[in-house]
Amino acid sequence: MQMQQDYKDISPSGSNCIKPPVSIPSQLLPNQKFVVIMNAEQFRRAGYQAIDRICDYHITLRDRPVSSQVEPGYLRKLLPSSAPTEGEDFQLIADDYQKYIIPGLTHWQHPSFFAYFPTSSTFEGILAELYASSTSNPGFNWSASPACTELEAVVMDWIAQLLGLDESFYNISKVGGGVIQTSASDSALVATVAARSRYIREHPQVAMENLVLYTTTQTHSLGKKTGLVLGLKVRALEVTAQDDFALRGDTLKAALEEDMNAGFHPFILIGTVGTTSSGAVDRLDEITDVAKHYPSLWLHVDAAWAGVAFVCPEYREAYQLPAINNYVDSFCTNFHKWGLIHFDGPCLWVRHRKHLIDALDVTPEYLRSKDGNAGTAIDYRNWHIGLGRRFRSLKFWFGLRARGVKGLQKYITDCIKLNTKFAQSIYESDLFSFVTRPSLSMTVFRLAPKSLPQLRTSELNILNRAFYTRLAARNDIAITQTELNEVFCIRMVIGAEKTLESDVEHALSLMKDEAMVLMKNWEGIGGRRGRKTHVVPSHSH
Ligand code: PLP
Image (cartoon, rainbow, N blue to C red; front, top):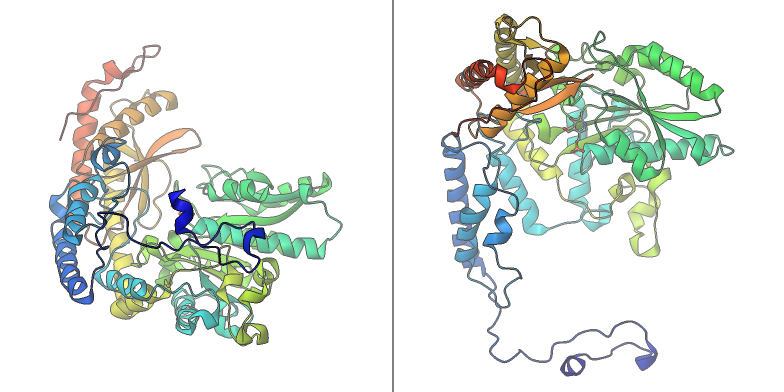
């Protein structure tokens, strides 16, 4: 009843309105203090402290454990079960971040971070994010904040140029264009929505349930997820170890013929440049030759990690840029992975923006604007799923200007050089061997001791799972695993900006140590066929 008194019905129809009435708190509750709102001077001081702490964090990274050792649920035990009733002093909040959050972080900027793919945090990027958050612009329409849209259109053209993309992908072409998405998964989803809409417009008689999305068995899980979200049939085309896990033209051709003869309609292929598991590069030269005979098949290229390497012209040919430029409909790369741009910076280019807009433009009256209606400005809300969007282009602008093209090229080539040395050591080692050819700054290998030549794949898998368990238990290295055609393997990816040659050597040496300990215990982990598998626990570090 008390609550009722705090509500006032301001609806025009009075008591006939079915909406809840608007709440207008009439007074503070007994004992309630005023809410603490930081003023500009307090923000200035807290901001100086935050920058100091961020600098200290970066300076001391090397001395920290790279992976967090907390247990699931650690934070719930430490934090109150509900938000505070009264506002709290900010110093307390800032200190609690240091106390409770930092220990639960994996330090992706750590020089010994070799897991997944890298993601950057640069000082320029931190400042860009700070500025962007200081105005909090959800620039969905040009008119909602013109600078947000205009800067994005410009930096996406800068990057297209930097990567050597064909001019038809530039925003300035007014036909194609680039947009910053929230993830490579969203880029694939959006490309598929556009491809489906184009296909259905061209083939209105085709039933949705006969549409097929093509991926390969090595496509990132975003392929399956896109199918799940859109309710599509997904066919994963086979790739082989002999082809270094790359999709070949003949495989695509055979699948297209088979499916079309069976009454299905493959309408998009998601190809990959730099697969997650092994850095494989689909043979887009062959694929585009086949696709030319199927003009309704949309080609989307997911180059989430490897695409950034196109900033170095020497990698363009081998990593299939000519085919991308000649034919594909859409191309995506995540600049936050290997482009020294803060998470999140996924870039998507389309050759014909019309298809995106045809598929995604939903414009109720409240989103209309003079320039949007007239088509004189880009309204990026029609290029992605959500409406509101972060002002991400600012960090691209800061980052690209601060490093310059040469700075970015040097970073990429330094990473590749470090990986080449690492790969050379693996190649020369008596303990390890490649599972597939190294790709850019990534090496996929396994423990395959020359002293144990008789081991079969299943036994090597047991050995390598145990090896990985030992590596994963350490907090002085972060590295991840994968499986390639049922071969369990270790992925080493170099990309943290602080990583030096000595860090890579250290990583190799600790891998050798772990391998030696493991091999001494080989009997214990089921080295003899038929014995029960038992993984030797890692000693604590
Ligand atoms: N594609 C590839 C090749 C990837 O390696 C990854 C992630 O590592 C993704 C897509 C997923 O990216 P996102 O998290 O932006 O969806």
